[in-house]
Image 1: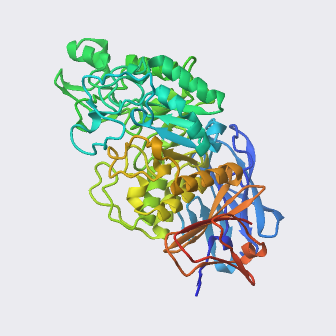
Image 2: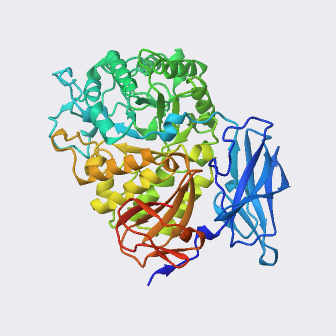
Length: 599
């Protein structure tokens, strides 16, 4: 027997995509149309737009603009009175009551403004990030060219390319495989064949570690990676292929071997001493999570700001030409005790970047307050995507999956997972959530294959990754089904003698699907079903409507009543049929599986 549930297909809907907000980049003072759609079966006597300008709310009546085979489309005019304008809809159903439609869904009670829809006047992220696919590379472990130095540095624990990764203990950051930037340039064909067009490189600055987050300089590329010339060659070759390259910068700290810190330690009256937080000079200073090799920057120093902004600009200009920055621990940058310069830092960095570049913040937990849209363009979406996907699909007690987490990952229901995803998406403007970088893992987490334990569930996770709003990111080797128990253990050298395989085919096919379906690159999102073993949603733009089903196990099936059943779905991925039973569309109940239909 199939589960017959009330679905979002029968409820009012609005999101920040062009279908509902045709003017995506308004200017202050503009009056723009906004649309809300009510299914034909959803009776309403009136619709009002509630907006907030200068802290005061106002109500504007909406008018019935048009009707189609599915919905009534109501339109209201929204005045853009502030850089961020909040709005939501009040729907009167006569004797059936009144409801609020807001970014988190439908509420039958009065609600605060925290989950209002938001439209901003800030410049949007570059178009290439919205349509792109990011491939994350850990330079020491991707590829080693013939130009790489023969000798390992004095601090290193040398390793052959096939040696197992040290996953725990003091030698983790010292194990050195010797990958370099020339090696990455020689393997761009592989990245392009997979379908990725944006490289994200973890740090390339010199440092006494394999991860290079403890930089000893921001003014040169590590000679072990090939130096400045190698970076310029890599970006030039990538750009000739139509690809982009994003660098990684630590604005929260330097390494303790950095020249700035050495001067600061040597002379308490030096300008550089003001770059850091000293409790008692020179021994007692603030560092990242108490790690002494990572002294924390004090962004109250005007001189530090000048130095760091010069670094930001230098590597984005020729001959290096990086296309953006990922900012390490962006959530912590500029925050120390009573000091909070975080949003100033975000806005300053963005102001020093060319218009067509991308500014990405690392953030492991609640990023919503840091993402109004005028600083960081977007975040690495651990909390609003990775963790709910992990928790829904895992059948194992895995973890802790994040540093500092006290408990293993807990399996959740689809309702809980989608609740988390909606909560985070609802708390930021659509311009931010639709550009956020979704991921299933990175160099800081266990591998997705290890978290989920089965290739079938990895395939479902990959389906969600490549069809959810935002920009997907793949950590090198995830497409090969590599495993790793924690972040350090996941930094596996690429097994160039064993590329391909069934997981690779899944990734490549899904990437091709995303590339060929514009609705997956910029379309809106409507959740339809969130049962225990399955979830379903729509991705829509003006040209197409894609119906997506993800299931983690066999289940009773999903029945979608109403107007969705008027059309014969055409399967684009997964191969299963969706059956028409009268006025109901029945989706298959097998699993784990991932299916996409065009309707």
